[in-house]
Image 1 (cartoon, rainbow, N blue to C red):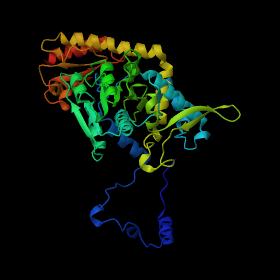
Image 2 (cartoon, rainbow, N blue to C red):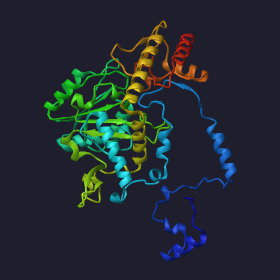
Image 3 (tube, one colour):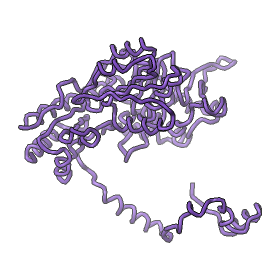
Image 4 (tube, one colour):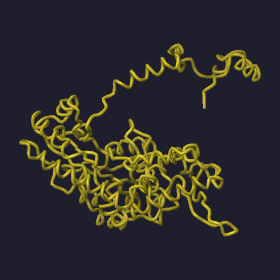
Length: 443
């Protein structure tokens, strides 16, 4: 749809209609201290000039790098059919089913998405998605607060630091008590987490694999959490759920994830996808939209929005359907990816990524001075300790076409010599061999 601004004559007509003589009068209620001195808007350019300018701007990006960067977002192969299916106009333009029953196709797609996510996590229910993985954790935490009417949240510090920062920002004015239990060498302090649980605890939040790539079984901790009457929340990497012990098997109350790895490209931070699933007892606390399947008075199968606590339906302060309208297309692409891959394809992707990560770990730790941060089981991501600054190593290898990983010192003081590395099926043994030789040479 083209953007067509109002002409000066139309602006004058509208101002006269409301009894004003100028645009300045229209905005006179805005204090002078809050108005800009001037608008630095360039003169209009032709289409060819704009295209040339944007191409020059884009050429400043470094592309074509071989990336071992993960830290929550992963470069998995996306079958061409996934974006092609989602680009069909009946999906691409449907936006969001505000006229719900008139959008049977969109509703059925979301119902299938919910079913796929619930099965992937081995949980009872899923909603129709929220913005991203961090938002999903916040919403899960608020589910626990509403359910328990308590204020204390216990968080393991090996939860993604990005998510931790989001929780602190979102809860700044909510009078909640966030208690963070320190990790040790990239491993969760499960005993410390258990000690932090008490009768005031609303939720326990952990991640598996954690930010350092380590895998844990939280079954016992979740059992202790339940004994305290608190809600257990786990953030997971969805691709690995095809091979790891699932949140459902661990008896988690709520499982969330960043859905980017399910068929969404890495794209300067989004748009991504927040996956939310929960147990039956918490379904009425689930935010956003939930699509249900039913039959009409004639016995015909249909899909409807249900348990949608929107502002139009209940008192505003109790509304939870606030942040998911634009996510349908991302959810649909994740569904297309899962359907194209199938259970066997997801498992093969996970196993191939983990196999390459082990090969990379063996090659890198054969370099003098390089060692694993810990000896815990890991998935497709692991942390290594270097004899030099991880920042310096990254700076030296990027000009040579490799991004070797994420420097952990950015978020964890004391780990400035540690690097977090990820492998996906798009990495080859040759890539790993070249990287290990470059690192060997750089050290």
